[in-house]
Amino acid sequence: MTERPDDTQPDPRPVSELSFDEALAELQRTIAALEAGGQPLELTLALHERGATLLERCETLLRGAELRMQQLVARPGGAVEAEPLRPAADEG
Image (cartoon, rainbow, N blue to C red; front, side, top):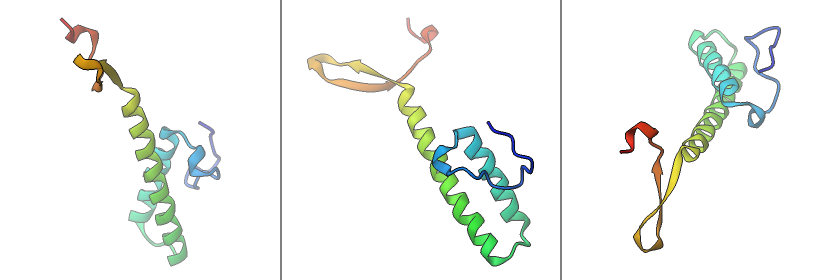
């Protein structure tokens, strides 16, 4: 993660380039700024829009991670089904 001198400013990169951790941290800062209030209307709107985009990015990355955590299991008749991965200790 790239450190910025002023951590209260939004990351200048497009949201699509942020990792999950970077997007989540910025989303948390954005929410805190919105909850604190006191910004001009235009800044409030910009924060809200950026926050919505950050939330969408986090959800997309989480869905991708969830898919990676599934395994494909062959079923009788040749069907393939996705199941959540289970730790090896659960298999018995």
